[in-house]
Amino acid sequence: MTDSNSSGSGAFGDFIRSQRKLAEMSQRELAKVADLSDAYLSQLERGLHEPSVRVLHGLSDALNVPTERLLRFLGRQEEGDDTEDREVTTESAILLDEALTDVQKQSLLDIYRSFVTANGL
Image 1 (cartoon, rainbow, N blue to C red):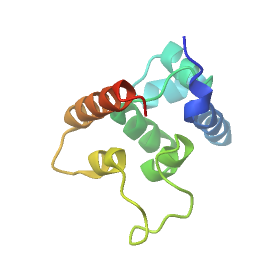
Image 2: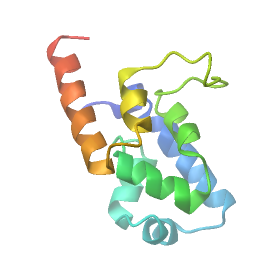
Image 3: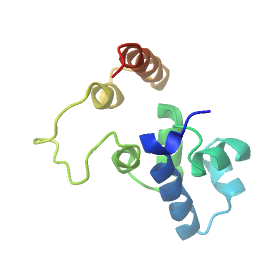
Image 4: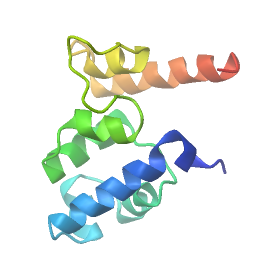
């Protein structure tokens, strides 16, 4: 198993846990509202997995937190970015493309990341 904390998953998990506690929700309650399993939410909070687009949207809705804020904790968007001044990355362009379904976005992200990994970047 790789150390997911280096990719932002640890910060993301800490943020999700803190938002859940602020909302006075148990892990089980949040998992149910976000349409996730208790075990998977636990793994997310511990930084063991990076969430899919579907999971991000579910957590965003359940916690009433903008998806862009969740992306910042995964290192996919810079704090204080202005949409006019922000550098558009491949991943952010895919995530923000309204012409694609969540499944299509996740497929494109998986393919893109596999290419980047194969190229050693």
